[in-house]
Length: 410
View 1 (tube, rainbow, N blue to C red):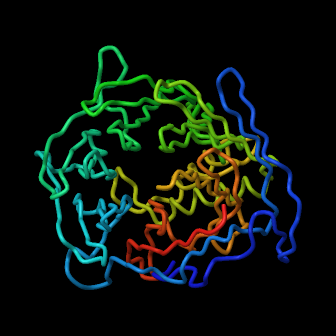
View 2: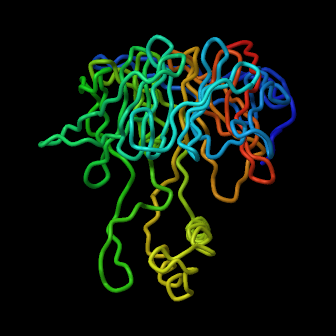
């Protein structure tokens, strides 16, 4: 990956065009209501077509340096967003700090740091805009939530209380909403998860509840014991805040489920999709990928390189892991500031795309078409006229970048 991934202007024909630019009739979106639930059935855009939305050839702002002042030396900046005034807020997880930059990428403030006191973090998780231009940050160490005002002054901390009896701290925050509520996921037994919505004081509100999650199966491991393991190419429960709705949906089949503030299912968005069955080659690709993660690693018990005998046992375990019946239908979901929902297409093993491909739906859930985003850019926030994401160069140096986005049509 590079600091200037995908250095070409990404704009071609619209949804209803073929790759050669000639107009083509496409099936119509079908919308119906069923027991108070709006169901939107979408045709798949023509293969090779693109929305006429233009992403610039290079970032307008790039924060990060190979060598320089400490605030610009980013380490694991996995969460970030931009305020309407242009300020960019970055959770620099490697130093447990929240770093703030102006619209030009100049550092203006650093908050937090490692520790267990007020405004400090054990393991800084994510940051999100909060009510009244304040900022919410949560800690992956204990899932504590800290609130800062727009000038970085620490305001308060609180915890979400789980729905268990007796109550315990621990539901994992995953998103904040404009009305001050918080979305969380708490894994429960088996292949389910508890999805909840909380008020600004940490009290639970009407919520989607227990939903299916990743597939888990019992596998016999070397030595004769049985362990619960995740299935290869498993489905996942994905979440997002989409306007006044909460999305909590499996990524298989191609069906996006969105819930109202009262926790009731409000909308189901479907896209035409042909399920694909993993092959034996795909299974072996999965095994070799898991093994590649272990080779060259360190044994946690001894601090020494993992011995060959232990690697051989690991291979036995990976070989025994069941494979999902079908691949996931999509890989990620993200709602932008204008209410559009971006759904990243799934990348099948050994079938590399030149750039990430997203299917974009309008605020009502009707499909608009495909958009490619710059190669190597991990997107965290999409505004009306920009995309904010993280990139790496060939040396592994990390950058947070703003790329211009021009929308037309749709």
